[in-house]
Image (cartoon, rainbow, N blue to C red; front, side, top):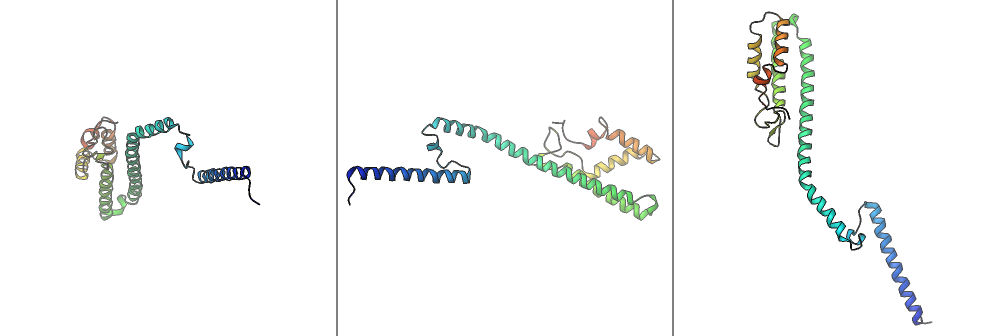
Length: 194
């Protein structure tokens, strides 16, 4: 039996519609799986104005994305540096507790060497840079944030040179490390805060 002309037309139309439905169903399944529209211009049905506006927004946001990437890197580097200082300080506190006056001259020399090493590590960490900028140097951003360990120790020794007891040394150091003390002008070499 041959298909009559109306039957062939109906069959062809039905086949075409079924094919279109299958293609759309496959695209919908792919979009569900990936989360992306397979053909954005077709999904917008020829309304390219929306697509062009979206592209313009993306293009305008590129400089902001670059700045955010730099800020994120600085933040991560700063957080890592502060964690390092925290760990170094905790280790130094434990070492200082174990070395007291009863440990003798050798024990005190070992404690002094550890303290110098700890101070050098902290000062080095405070001079951390990211992308050519000193992270802890305030608004200056160039150079270093603090002096080197030799200058720092010479400054501390000069402060306590005339005192005779630990309480006086502590009071002197507390005063000079406080806001407005010599630390701000002698040890800290950066600019004003950001």
